[in-house]
Image (cartoon, rainbow, N blue to C red; front, side, top):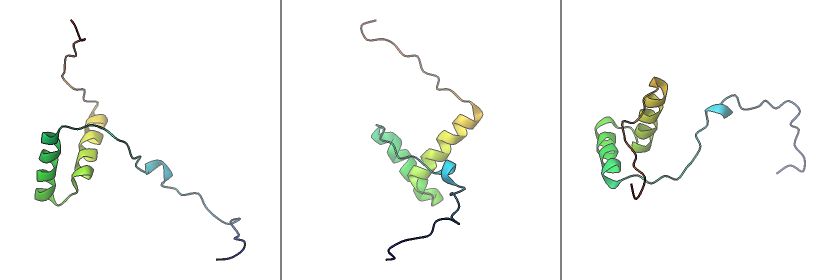
Length: 73
């Protein structure tokens, strides 16, 4: 390795805003299995399928049709 490097002509990564952020979430085993089977059919990794599905929902402004109840209510 060089002792010093010249970064004066370097350029920022134009794709930095498009990088994916790793997170940890809890997902039901049945849901994971569904996407894994879909991954086998499509040849797309299941995590990518889940990301595409969620991105599509966000782009369309879809909201879950759930009713949350407080504990003890």
